[in-house]
Image (cartoon, rainbow, N blue to C red; front, side, top):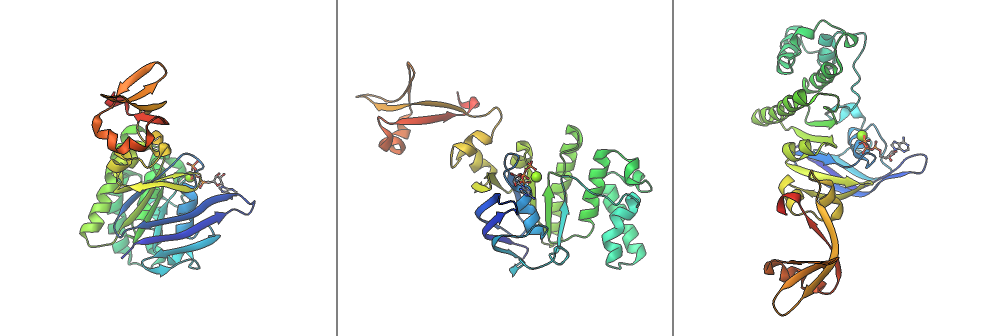
Length: 295
Ligand SMILES: Nc1ncnc2c1ncn2[C@@H]1O[C@H](COP(=O)(O)OP(=O)(O)OP(=O)(O)O)[C@@H](O)[C@H]1O
Ligand SMILES: [Mg+2]
């Protein structure tokens, strides 16, 4: 069961900067969890801590029920695809993809079969003999993906793996990653995936659940629909959705007949269904959020 538990995680970088504040997050076995948040919200820091590439200042990380705080990255059964994919420059695409299996001493013919299978899936079969500096950025990113998926580890960590691709390729790669997730599930392989992005479309379309981060704190963890329709706070409401939600400051009023929202010199008659929820806000200043499509 490749579930991941982050318990009271704190991260303070050596320069004293506190990047993560008492973070708690449970990721289920086989789940596709998307982490979104603005630049600098500590998305990569979280992934790096799960992978074992970054020390944890406080708290515990469990993978498959095992405390991994002191486990080396190579012993965590994890594959990572980074924002800045680093391929081995002196090896061909084929050798890059085959590398992990070669280390594991998998027989040559089996490696060959797997490399070709992966290359076909990622549409890079004609590039196998080239070196990384002889292919495009988008192609390199696909090689990096191939190198990660060939081992079929229990946990995949993706850190903005599609950020350098054009829109069309992005869409097709998203589908490929989701297909891979499904395939591994059908093969009864745990394949828990954590996918970091700042692309909302990616978050909304790929995630079983989405974790919204801001300044190293979790704002909300929920399904895409709940994140969109029932945001926990103004940050989530504002961050998710394009064009963004409109916010209007005003006062809740009640007269004999209607339940109203008063702002500047306007009034908006509110649905009486809201009355119960807003009972305690009568005559108080509130911020009303309304999505463009609901106006
Ligand atoms: N080695 C470090 N020392 C000090 N501060 C760091 C270090 N690495 C990252 N930080 C800071 O920690 C915060 C989180 O960084 P992180 O790279 O996790 O953000 P991110 O959410 O992945 O951002 P982006 O979307 O830009 O990739 C940032 O404010 C960053 O400046
Ligand atoms: Mg990052």
